[in-house]
Length: 108
Image (cartoon, rainbow, N blue to C red; front, side, top):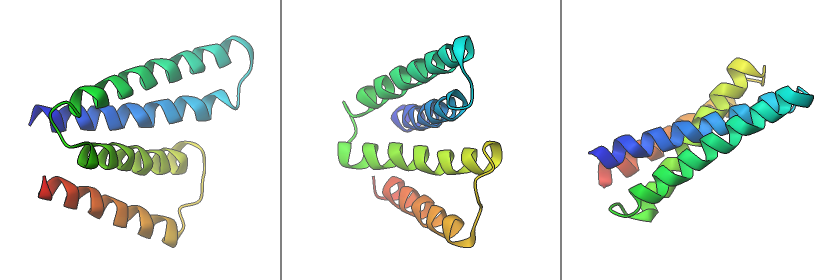
């Protein structure tokens, strides 16, 4: 059970590093370095947790769940914080991705 918790945290850290990238593209100078520093920290934590999880969980399950959490979270962050469109088809396909993640969790 702890592996699933760590995997969710790793996926959320993936969302964190994409958020930092999104913020870094709109600033310059010192703020850019701060956001890129956050990007590096979130990346390091995310990859480290994923590496820890795959020691006792199949990579064929862990990696898709990790990327799925990151993808869904990044789309939500894009909609909420970066004014990206929330079209029907975008939300539909994100929903199917969530269903796939739940399916992998159910089968593992």
